[in-house]
Amino acid sequence: MALSKSNGNGNIKSMADFEGKEIEFPVTYQMKAVMIGSENDDDNKQKLVNVFMRHEIAYSYLNKKVSSKGSYISFTYQVTLTSREQMNKLYADLKKIKELKFAV
Image 1 (cartoon, rainbow, N blue to C red):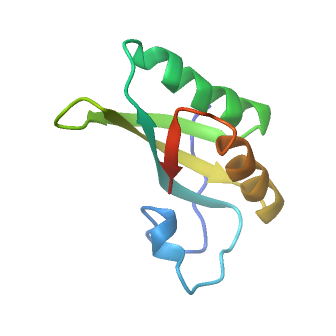
Image 2 (image 1 turned 45 degrees about the vertical axis):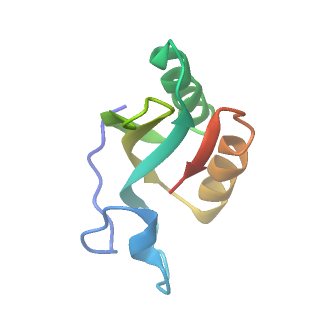
Image 3 (image 1 turned 45 degrees about the horizontal axis):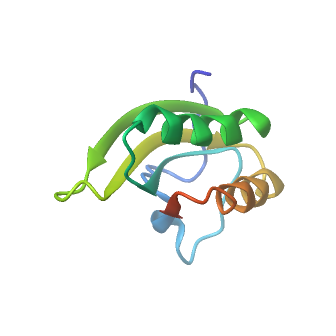
């Protein structure tokens, strides 16, 4: 899914930029998911994509970074959320991924 919508929240890079602010939907931001490293990064990446697709979230993959020891991998996606309910469901489902350490 390609992203094309802008939002009323200005230049938002991550959820941390929302701290103390009211979120206006739709909103587009960069979400970082840190996961336990594995031999097959594509499996971890697909678990995230499955959640996006389940909730009909527009997304685009931006990059990945591997920690210095290779223990963790962070995936960065640009996502567009259309409602608070969709946001709550997204983070609830992300918590179910056992390899996920955190997502912001």
